[in-house]
Length: 369
Image 1 (cartoon, rainbow, N blue to C red):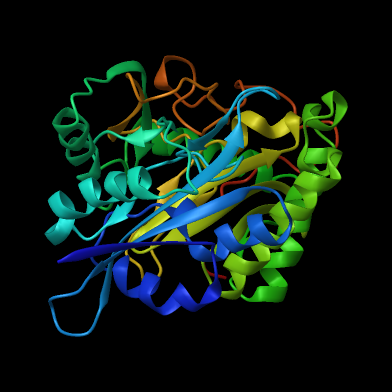
Image 2: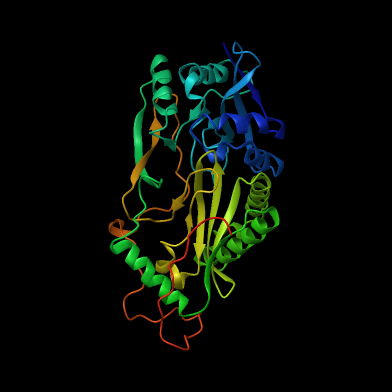
């Protein structure tokens, strides 16, 4: 038997979450530590739907779905938004596949029966290749709802079996770009997984973003004190559990590019990247998150062989429309990663090399330092 409880985010669920993600498809944005940060900073009003298996011995968590209570417009009624907070980019519930066909209908039934929850749910940004997606379509069909797809986008996923080219033109181009940077100083990639190291690296990312076009336009995280307070708390909560870190590309110890990573089960998710605009093309292929003990890795913008996971926005009688937020790393123009043009000069902010560029050993682009 499946029972569903509705609660505000709290840290007590952490051990059950850790157990669940070893069995279920991952969604980093459902991590209770991130949800708690949104509530603690009054960044979002969130309710967690927790599904429990009651007939398999001790009560076991078999599903979690966090929903955001919000108003689309000042005079509109409250709705439930499947994206739990701004800066979350995936709505899929985290469900034990052995209980999928029971948990998803139980979630909708709990929403329907709860006197405190709105009865309109805005559904968007679901992983179309996650087992919860067809289960959700089936549950909606059982209620006479036939949603249609508003939009479908593809996100690159890289695994040990797909997406990493060890030879060929892509790797050659990356080595050439690395050598150009190496002519300007000592280049390394660092990903400090300690709490203090991760927080320091996150501040480097925030500074890079603030100094970019986002800072000029006022859309950087540091441009809004409320946003800044939330993301700092969220990152701290996740890093304290070793569920977040920042990979830095450095020249002579100075960060020139940053990749913010969040970890969930066997998945490492690139949340945000930022770099000095002068080295954007060089950066695209470098910050790689290779497996630590979790067995997954990502390469930002990798253009080699990869499978694309579809992400969909739904619309139907009980599904509201809402704007899509967020920018995501993916293949560049024509799906290729371009390096600096041959014969081009190093970025102006880097010191001019005192000697011609020399080949250097290709680095190990691992996440651990």
